[in-house]
Image (cartoon, rainbow, N blue to C red; front, side):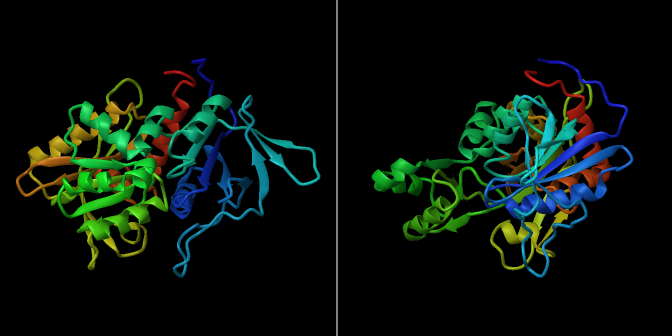
Length: 372
């Protein structure tokens, strides 16, 4: 039902959900730590919910930083109080060992700070829809399409956006007709980028220069996902733009574009460059012609609307030496520490990290539950 929920007189209860059972578990924790540090506690009552790597939901500490410490990635442990979200209720239920289940009260909005499969891909969005709970970010369809890079590119291409050449390597084809797959990829030319179709944070991505390194790259990607995407390498500068849904009926807003600058000897924007200190820099606004910057912003909004996104997204482009723009991908829940690209782009546009977090919560609270 599309019922509007009244804003409670008590502080708004926000469940920040993070962790998850995929290779982006630690990335999720880092973003959640940043979100938890800036939520206005005079307006919001926060319930931090961790999803352990085995899939269990637990009540976790609110005061933990969840940052990389001494090179160690953060992790949700299974030692906290177990939680459940019944599909017929908007209340979290605590499951203490040997005790009668107890309600933690109705949750007004969920901030699913989750990346990758079993979180960013429409799964938790479907659970929250079934429970009638509002949440930050895109719905089931946009989340699912945005997570699967193969279908994402098909939708973007159908919307008339410039997408580079690619080949999808499906599990059965790789096992039963490898020769044909390799021939299709070779037609893209060398080098190529090989990545899991349904993963993020540059996990499992590598660059292949010949048939031998291609097979190795595909096997690496298959460790994360049996479905693999192989893309023709596009020589160009990496330009990114963030998109934010507007309150009311105004169209989505685009940030200033920024250019990602990878430091050191790295060939591309990999996991370490994204999340370890001093591995990348963001030049925002990007030093590109005004016409190109406006084209980036317009295409970013077009991509957002093509997938029917909600809340926020980050759209990634290549800008070639000839002035051509190629859309690489859209992320429906981009990296979200205060130093991640999307929040930095909004800061450069005039919206602080704390204001961005509050804007996303208000968007979710003002969105009708159910079909929309």
